[in-house]
Length: 304
Image 1 (cartoon, rainbow, N blue to C red):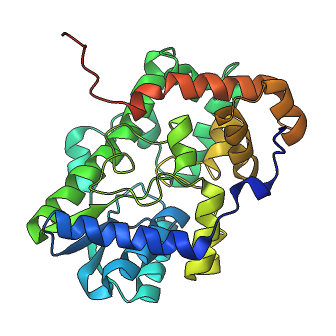
Image 2 (image 1 turned 60 degrees about the horizontal axis):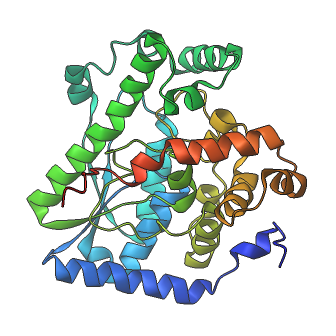
């Protein structure tokens, strides 16, 4: 039967899914003998939804929201994070990553040395747009020059530092680390391998597309101001919609493209139904293959 790529393919029993996820989180907490749960809260759709699910699972008194600001981060992120925590009655903990990132050399590449966030955003967009081939796709394919690699390495270390600090706090409190990645970013590798969006004790929404996460957020009552935020990675200046700015496909369409690819639809059929150029559909398919190692780390040879 022919697949019609419309939002209907993402329909689900939202109430049942929310209950299942909450039960899963609490079961995992009990299984690992943890006293509560810690969520690294960015104030975006994903972490706010996961925070709401975690509170539903075990009550606000057992949950802490971890804020991880740094000197070049998006100032709006903390504002929205505090809004989400306040809405749910969750205590926030703050750990400034600036000293750690400075020690790790995160501010030594060219982009972080530009003095203001607006100027860094302009420089990043100008560099990204003047390339004949998408730098993100190049790096995923093992290509790119030293400047590109140094720049993205400086960005990636921020996410890995967040993970280290998150586990430090969680282990001090005997808390479960609850991760916030969803299926959309997982399939295209739009996260940092071994970073805060990759590793956790439990990943409640890992099997949901972004479209489904939005549905879940609306059901849970996540504030509209947070639900309407663009998928902004915050740590990359000038990137407002990471799917559009890094892949060339807006967040509203990327799920349909990925759904079609997952169901082995021809690129031409996906392009016709979604309006996304066939060349871009093919590039996204290649990206899924290039980032497969991120979804299957620590591979070992079959020796016997």
